[in-house]
Length: 264
Image (tube, rainbow, N blue to C red; front, side, top):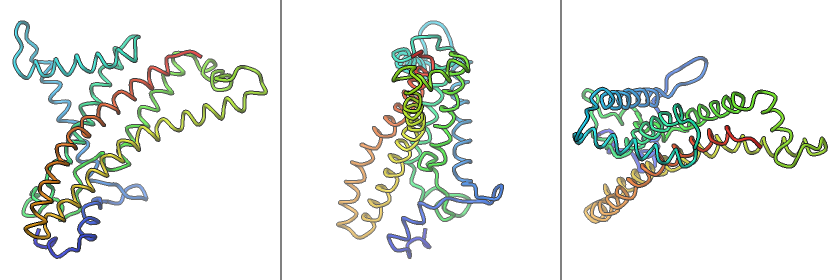
């Protein structure tokens, strides 16, 4: 932390927005993103597995009641957009919601005071918010995109899907095939782009605003008072963003898979 006290505001913010990179397959790998994503994924699996193993009849305990409320909420939301068999989509939506929420929530941890041995995590350029890394959000969105393509082919058949690409939405006239394909191309490309960039943009901006407020709070007594009040207000508002963005990502996942089951 002492070393960071000598940094200018620009250098301080740039330092906190730099990933811990390692060489990988001829390029670089954001190791901090991978570590945090895997660790949080394991925590999510452990929480949900414990809930599944410890289900008891009768009056549930607080932990079981909380999990049941979460399950009912997710199931109700998925049912509203996916009326078919939800044996896969329901658990997927639950996993996506909890995992993305956990990754988003890392934004509340003060990286300047989290110790890694005798050093702060931030001294090593270790970013702890995986969803503030566009690689994470694109990987999640592309995974959903792959599932969407898979279900399009599974439900409609390869021929049916290709027919839809060329014949929807303007009709099956061969003269309209180029326009249908162009329309479908834009629609397919826009889904992973909007799915990933919405989450990334909100979390990156949230992290940046926290850093700006922290730098303001370090300018003196007046700055600390104003910056502290603003940081508290932003933290309260950011709680809504963290939950809302996880919810939106989950709902878009269910919507895209529901669209893959529709016939045009």
